[in-house]
Length: 172
Image 1 (cartoon, helix red, strand yellow):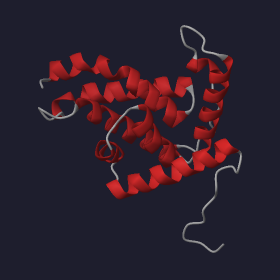
Image 2 (spheres, rainbow, N blue to C red):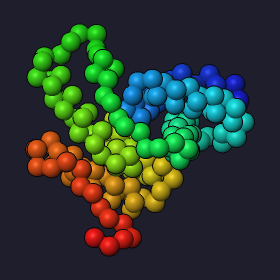
Image 3 (tube, rainbow, N blue to C red):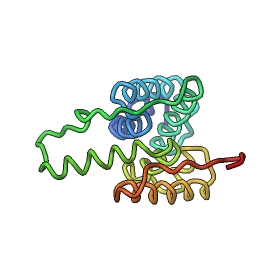
């Protein structure tokens, strides 16, 4: 794919990038900023895109790396859900809106790594291998994050608990 072809095909992936950015950041404005940063980086690096490569996975990798780089530069974000960000053309039944709000609130409670893994698999329909590659982690690590994220999400939705805290490398 040529430079021009990469740039021409970017718009096909903007909606998916927005969803993933929102899942990562939790805020509409932060998500839009991340999408814009991703597209700017993609256009600047279009020459490095491998002919025959997966443009979608390449873009999501750029976004993931941009998010991780940005997170390292600042404090961990507090996630405030913007309920208007999920408005649709025809409002669904109230119960569906409430369930969606509850799932988004539960998803926001997950650690970023688990939230990102779940978003790539469940929302963006990436294969496990593609999602691991986007995040730059081994497949086993992705599977572990998915399993922990799904179980924690189930527990939160049942009202069993909030996000469990794990002590890593220290005494309990």
